[in-house]
Image (cartoon, rainbow, N blue to C red; front, side, top):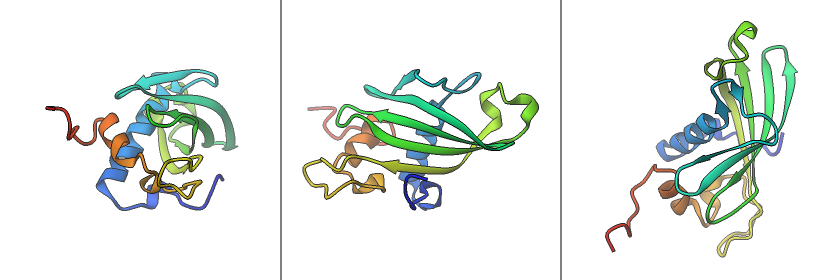
Length: 140
């Protein structure tokens, strides 16, 4: 495990949407993104698959790098529960049961590294870039 803060246990609507967007983009139609591939989403964001390891027959650990306009190479780790081994080739049989975050802590107001994305100085920008919140400067 990267750290001890499992984002799946954070009770916040914004965090839930943040987790959902990451998990939704960490898979393709055929399951988790293949190692070495990435998927674009939101406003100039992408998630890059680094490595997948089976932990148990129906549990997998996946390591990713999240890239945003404001910060690159944010470590994301997802522990997936696989609903049915027979259907492991389909994305909809993977459910995230744990998710971990680690940035470099280099932001202007960060003491980093941060293990809670809300502690990153780019949190509000990410919510806009992910499409969770409206851009407050959109009409300027």
